[in-house]
Image (cartoon, rainbow, N blue to C red; front, side, top):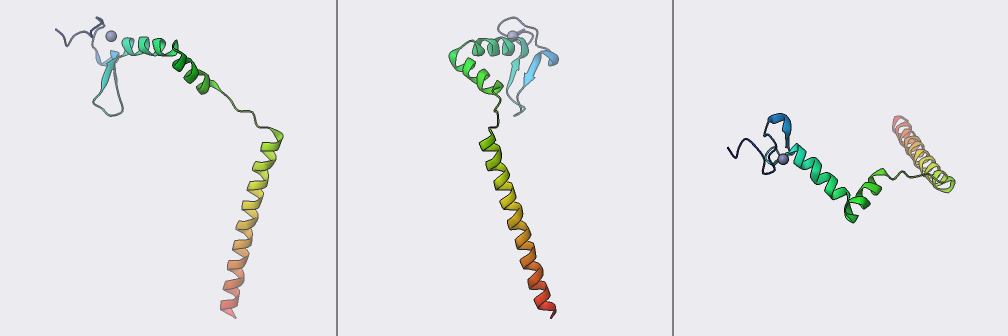
Length: 93
Ligand SMILES: [Zn+2]
């Protein structure tokens, strides 16, 4: 009888049961949804929601720093390849 419903009276069906990625822990979906809503109304939960929804705008300065970094990395890669080629040629001679 205890197997048929959760402590709050929701039916225990496979569709109604969330199984955690560990494959062992499980929770009634309606209860889990209610718990999520409760969590989101706490200061900690509100902060988490805000953090999750936050989008970052790239400033021009940040954009240029990233471009510069990529260009430097690409140049270093080309120079490394040229050095390898020169070494190979030296071996052939
Ligand atoms: Zn429940």
